[in-house]
Every structure is written in C-alpha cells, then in structure tokens.
Amino acid sequence: MDISRTGDVWWKNAVFYCLDVETFQDSNGDGIGDFAGLTRRIDHLAGLGVTCIWLMPFYPTANQDDGYDVTDYYGVDPRLGTLGDLAVFLRTARDRGIRVIADLVVNHTSDQHPWFAAASADRNSPYRDWYVWRDALPPNGSDDLVFPDKENSNWEWHEATSQFYLHRFYRHQPDLNIGNPRVRDEIHKIVGFWLQLGLSGFRVDAVPFLLETQGQDTPPELDLHDWLRDLRSFITRRCGDAVLLGEVNLPYQEVRRFYGDEDGGELNMCLDFNMNQALALSLVREDAGALVHCLRAMPQLHPDDGWAQFARNHDEWSLDKLTEAERQEVFRAFGPKKDMQLFGRGLRRRIPTMLKGNADHIRLVYSLVFALPGAPVLFYGEEIGMAENLDIPGRLSVRSPMQWSDDPNGGFSTAPEDKLSRPQVPSRKWAPGAINVSAQEHEPDAMLTWMQRLIRRRREMPEIAFGEWSFIPFPDAEIFALRYTWNSRSVLLLHNLSKRPSRSQCRPDSAEAWGRLATILGSGPFDLAKDGTLSIDLPAHGTLWLRVRPRVDGGL
Image (cartoon, rainbow, N blue to C red; front, side):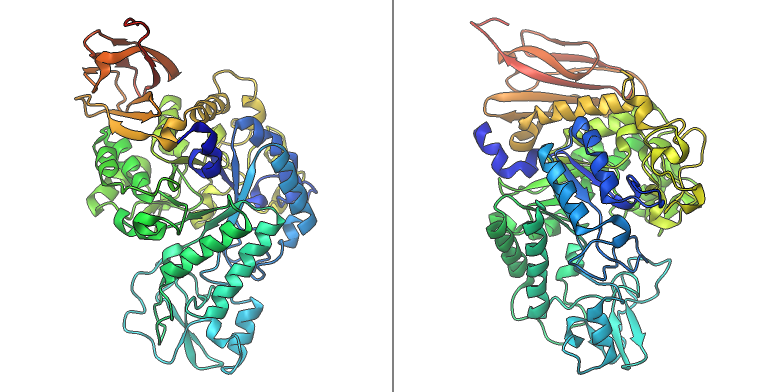
C-alpha cells in the first residue's frame, strides 16, 4: 500500500480517545459535563494528537447504567446539551482534524423506552415482538450472567402480561429482538441519522449479544452475520470512510467471525481483549511469554481491517480469558483487596495506582499498547496518569471527572462539590491538586508531555498499522521486541518488562544488510555490529523504538 492510500482506511493508523461527556467538562455550573464544555476542551485533544474521539452514550437515558440504558436513539440527553450543541462540537472537532464516533447501544433499550412501554402494555402491541418473550423460564436462564453481583437470571418475569423477557444485562435493559426485520431496519435508520449529522462511525456495544438468537422461538430468516455485513454496506454507502469498531470479548477465532472471516465485510475493527489480558499477565510476571503467545494466536485480518489496542477501557479490566490461577496472580499484584475487584473476573482500578505510581512502569505500559499491531485507544485521563475513585460503585470507579487544574473540583465544574454528577478522586496523591492537565502542560518530564510525544511518534509510524510484524529473537524472557516492515521500511520496538536493567543481544534476520539505527523514542545504549548482531542495554521498564536506516554505498 502506498502511503497516499492510508487515509482511505484511516482507522488503522488512528489514535482513539474514549470519553464520557458527563464527566469531561461542565460549562454551565450544574455539576454535569456537557457538549459545550467538551467543545471548549477540544484544543487539549488536538494538542495531545488524538485523531478520533469515541463518545460514550450521550442519548436520552433513564440513567440507571451510565447512559447504556437508552430511551431515545435520536436525541441528546438534555443534561448534556442539545442537538445544536452536538453539531457545534462535531464541526469544531472536524476543524481540528479530529473525527468522532459514538457508542451504538442496540442490543437492548431501557425499560422506559417508548418501544418497551408499548410492548409491555399489551401482548397484541405492534412492538411486542421488538423484544424477546417466553411463557416459561428457559432451563439455562441463569447461565452466563454478565452482572452476577446484581442479577440471578437473564430473564425477568413481567407480571402485567404474564411472560418472561430476555435481558442479557440488567433487568431494566430488555434485549431487542434482532431476529425481527423491523428492528434491523430501525437500526439502519439510527446509524443513518447520526452519520448524516457528522459522526464518522460507531463503537458497537456488546456485538456477540446483539447477534445471538437466545430465547427466540424461530430463527431469523437470514444469518445475522449477513445482516452485520449488510449494516456495514449501508454505512459505507452513507459515509464511505465510516468505521464500525466492535466490542467482541471472545477468543480470537470467534472474534475473527465478526470481521467477516477471510473476506472481511463486517466489522472494521475489534477491541483486542485477548491481547489486553495477555498484557496484564506479562506485566505481572515481568515476562514477555504471554504477549508472545497471544501474538502467535492472533488471526490474520483483511488488509482494510485492524485491531484496537488498549491498556484500560471504561469498564472493569476484564481478566475472564485467564485461568483462575493466572487471574489470582494478577489480582495479587494489581488489586489484592476485594473492593478493587469486580465480578470475580476483573479489576476496577486504573493503571497508575495498580503500578504504584512508578512513572517508568506506567510509560512502559502505554509504549507496549502503542507498539502492538493495531490502533491505540486511550481512555480519558490516561494522558495525565489519573487514578480511580473506589468510593464510586462498580465499574464507574474509573469514570470520575476529568482533572484539568488544581482549582475547586479540578477545574471540571464551578458547581458546589456535592452537586457534581460524580465525586472527584479523594486521595491527596491522586487528587486534582496533584494530578491535572494545567500542571503538566509545560513540564518536559510530565506524563502529558511524554504522551504527546508517544502519540506523535506513533502517528509517524505507519509501519505498525500497515506493515508485517515479526519477533526479534532476543533470548531473555523480559525483553518484548517487535519488528515491523512496510514498503522497504523497518522499525524495531524494544521493551524491558523487568524492574531490573536488561542487557541482551541477538542477530535479527537480514540485520547484516542494515545501515545505522536511529532512535525514535526511549533511551538506552545499543549497537549494531557489521555481522548483524544487535546489542541493547535497556534500563528497568525501559523502552527503545528504533528505525532501520538503509546502507549507503555499501557503508553505514
């Protein structure tokens, strides 16, 4: 692929930034973030270097699950502003060269959505079969619970109409019946509406649940993967470069199906939960083995498709793919107290607190994420090293207000503290007075400054997005080293997972034909001998990104 074509599949080399409008910036002093406040902060994101903002749900909501219980797919939650405010934000972001995608939450609605109100009022309602109903509780109705701390079944009895309805999440979130063609047509209308207003695509929530047919008396008349392919075709017709980023937390070979198998044509990207969990294990063990094993298992994708790599997302750090022994190993290192864990399978902490504030260790994590095959995804506040607030229940612990300054409420809002939609981080070490954007903007050694540099360097390296990766055969378990080659260009990305310095050497394939090596990011002595032997000396938790320069006239 020529570099001039890389913009056609922009998502492969993008830097995504996920945020919740409600907790980003309050513009009117009511304690709730809004689109006007987000627009005011757009230059922070432009200066950071992100190229695509991922908005968590901003639709009207019953607000029992942080916006993931939608009551209207065609509007903006009045607490966050108006459609006009959203339009101003989208135009301002576009002016700064930033695309915007949003959560598409169509596996379920709120039980307060007008569709469910009509469906639950009368068995003969035209909306009745927009949801999944059963006369008797299925024998496996309590299996595979998403929220075992809150629910004991995936089915809820509806007294008024004497049937059970399906809810794979909370009981107040009844599942839509994707087997109903009218539901599928409505989803087309929803995505078409938001694309027309200026979105560049969607992060599709809970894709495997969206496509399942559990509880349906008769299977749909078409394969639902064919429908997903049709949805992508519809979106491409409406907006040729729109993206579908899927949440598919399944083993790799099952994830592959949601891309459309070898031919592609379904999702453009999937969040890489398998690699994310391998990252956790490698960090704990200070051993690259888990990452190496995961990379070897990673399936090939269509050239236009890609992975989305992340350190933390807006939910718990799910460790469900690990064995019980491995999960307990991670728990002991990163979240030994019960209130740091969730559902017995995940952690409700952010990276800086799990790593006890060790700056080099924290930066190693993000260097690894940015070095993996795919596009990096940041969660708001990661650029400054924000912590979680464990006083906030459940998964919401990592969704405290953004910390802009050491002003009251961290510069997030001028409202009284007790009026904030969510409390600030209370710990003195991690509170806004100690961790904030303003304090780091002009500090050359600050996390924010380093993250800006990391993003800039990653954007300058299309080799990661479009090239072929291979392992660099260092013999030491603590060294994780990748080589990317694309259009005769090569880069080497080296990481020391250990808390001790590491000195090592190896002979990469064809290295004897290389010229000099130029540092892109990180530090540490290195040497390339004439016979192709590469020697490195990485500091503890060290990172070193190198570009291979070709030989000139037979010399270096």
